[in-house]
Structure formats: structure tokens, C-alpha cells
Image (cartoon, rainbow over all chains, first blue to last red; front, side, top):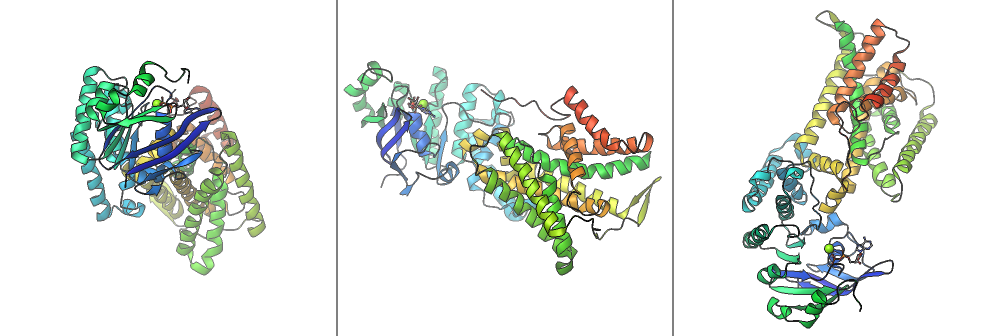
Length: 258
Length: 287
Ligand SMILES: Nc1ncnc2c1ncn2[C@@H]1O[C@H](COP(=O)(O)OP(=O)(O)O)[C@@H](O)[C@H]1O
Ligand SMILES: [Mg+2]
């Protein structure tokens, strides 16, 4: 059984059909790239999976559990984490605090424990910190630890957001254009860090990415979305030669004729 | 002079506790909770009613629990259910809640003033340097300081506190991260109600108990919150203490009759000179 199973997903905004029957699977530990022109529905798909948009039809199963109708916080507790096309960090908080906030669904000690500072609370606190330290180490984020993240350069903020998603210990990580706005060197570095992340924690990754070069090198499978439909899916080498892909990227696009 | 300062600090500490409840809600919901005082009033009446069957400590426990639950329930069951309500609409809802509470208190407990028995005496006094402080005042001061310290620890040292701060900084980002925002909001309202009730219990022995006994303290707490900055927790504490001391000095050296006017004048001056309050920050929405 696939980790994530999307079936016949439909989402419309007024007259705009953002998703027109999307089928998609991601298996445990798999690295899938999701590509497609602007307006294809990639972010909308992410928003449906994480509970921010309610699809009009279709189902989304995660570890066999239906996600449609669940709230975003319930979904994140199930082991799904994401980063955003526009960074959504707490800008006035430090890198460390942002990552700790990512741990919210893993806190075992209750409020009473916290107020009384019981041994259970200390143990829990320590475990949370250790996990966060591990991630800071892995992503080389020590510089961001005590600095309000709003003051960090853009590339670092992107990494903090990745770190915060990792802090949630997801079994599926959704990354929405994480390399957009990065310099070529930063992109390269981001790719390496993503490999490190997989080696260390082994989450499945669904990555939205426009840089085809990066996609071809990183992913095991590529899914092409165009006008709310999956038009192709397969290994990178195969997708590169796919007529629909060439069409979507070089011809049609969002505003083009059907 | 020392006496005035001491009185001012003791009263001011209670203003601070009330202000903290107002600020907590304002920080997370961006709205003024006009039911803050009335909820406390009802809870203090509960102490009064349950004191006989349960004894004072039992009644206090019941009232604190009830207030916390009521505050959380109002947030969760009313404010969060009217999804399309504007901020103004929500403020009106708190006004309505305030009316419901004071109406209920009138029906259940009547309009007459009742003495509120409290285990600390206002007759027994201690000497402190050149000043005199009653057992009740000293007790209130200590309890208020403990409450402030507790709230500080909750906000600064616990994970819930971190989430509360995150939510008040950027509710949208908190929702996007998948923080349990609805529960956080309800929790904040519960804590605010608890603080208000604690302050109410310390005030009732002095003011006597009737359905409108929290009105003036609420206005004072509100003034303190505006002085300190509506979104600042330390600001609420500073604002309350400052207001208490200024009132006490004003009453002592200028005029007792115009003390209430003082807090109104302070609000006006503050809004003119520094609208964000002493310790508040100018709130800027990202675009
Ligand atoms: N909240 C929304 N309201 C209205 N239309 C939206 C909304 N979100 C997405 N859309 C529309 O859905 C389509 C897909 O958008 P999106 O999912 O952002 O595409 P992508 O991420 O692939 O660029 C676009 O036509 C976009 O305008
Ligand atoms: Mg997008």
C-alpha cells in the first residue's frame, strides 16, 4: 500500500478548475518530484493534502487514513509536514524557537507537568531539544539558532523552514518550490542537504520544483501536472523525453490554448 | 509617602492581574474582551455560594475551574463558531456575553451588596518601615505577584507558552504550521478568565459583592493595559503598577474625588502621545 494515495481529486475556485481529477501515489521513503507550469495546480494539491483547501470530490489517503475533512493540525499530527512557496516562519522568533515549534505534536508531557516542572517534563524537554539540535547540526544551521529568522538571508530562512518541517518527524515531506529564489550555488547546497536529510531521517519527499536539472538529479520519479491533471509520471530519464512534458514546458502553459 | 507608594503598589498589582487577562486575549485575538470583568464577577459569586457547602478553599477551586472552563467555552463555542464575524462583530459578542453574565448574576444573586468573607483580615496590620499594611493587602500583593510569576513562566518557559507567543505574532503562520490554534485560543481565554477571577476574589472583600462590582476594576485594568501597551505582557504589569501608584499619590496629594477621572485622562494622554503604549510594539502586518 502506498504511503500517500490521491484519487480523483477535484478542486474548483468559482469557474477555475484548479484540480481536475488528480491521481497520485507516493510510497514510503520515495523521492517524487512534481513539476508543471505555473497555475498547473501544484500548490493547490499541497493545500488539499494538508487540509487547507477542501476538495469538491476525490479522496486523499495517508497510511490508509482519509485526510479529506480533517483539520490542518490533525493532519500534521499524522506525520505530514511541508514548507511553503512563500516562507511562513515566525519572523521575530529565533531559529531554535521556530524548530521547537515544529515539535508541537511530539510533546508528551502535559500542561500540569510543565507547570510543576516534573521529571517527566524535564525528560521530555531534553528529548525535544536533542532532536532539534540534531537537525540544526545536519542542516548546518548553527548561525540561525539565536537570531530572529526574519533577519536571516533568504537562503537560510528556506533552510530553517526545512528544518522546522523535519522537526515534525514527518513520514512524508512536502516541499513547495524550496529552491526558488536561491542562487545556483545555494541550489546545489540545498540539494546536498536534502540528500543528507533522506539519509538521516528517510522521509518520503514530494518536491515541487521548476529547475529540471535539479529534478532529474534528485528524484526517483517525476509526476507532471498540467491544468489540474497528471499528464505523465515515470522515471526522470523517461519523463525528459515525454511529448506532453515538452508541450507543457515549451508550448502550452497555464494561459495557452487547450 | 512610603504609605502611598505601598498602597499604590498593592492596588496596582491587582490592576496588573486584570490587565494581564485583557492583554492575553488581545494578543491572540486582537479583540477587547468586554466580558472580562463580568466573568470574574460571576466566578466570585460562585465562591460566595459554594463557601458554605465546600468551605472556602473548595469554593475557590470550583470557581477558578468554572471561570477557566467558561472562558475557554466562550472562545471555542461562540467566538470560533461565528466564522465570518469581523473583529467588531466579535467585540460586540463579548459585550453581549457581558450582558448575559451580569443579567444572570442579577437573577441568581440579586442586586444588593453582600460582604465577601475572605480568610485574610483587613483589620490585622503589620508595620513596614514607616508604613502600615493590612493582612489582606499584603496577601493580595503576594498572590498577585505569584500569579504574575506563574504567567511569566507559562509564557516564557513552556511549550504551550511558545505556541501562544507564536500564534500572537502570526496567527496565519501558526495555522499553516499545524499548531492546534483553536485549542490554543480557548486555552488563552481560560487563563485570562482565571486571572480575572483571582483578582476579583481579592477585590471583593474591599468593594463588597454585587453584580457590578467588577466594572470599575475592569476599567482600571483596561487603562493599565492601554498604558503598558495592549499586546505587551510586561507592559500590563508595568501599566498596572504605574496606575496604582499614580492613583494613590494623586488621591493623597491632590484630590480623592477625581481619582477615577485620572485613569481616563491617562488613557487619553497615552493614546495621543504613544498609541502603542509604553512597552507595546507597533503592529505591522506583512504583505
Ligand atoms: N485561493 C485561491 N483562490 C482562487 N483561485 C486559486 C486559489 N488558489 C489557487 N487558485 C487557482 O488555482 C490554479 C492553480 O494554482 P496553484 O495551485 O497555485 O498552481 P501552481 O502552484 O502549480 O502554480 C490557478 O489558476 C490559481 O489561480
Ligand atoms: Mg505554486
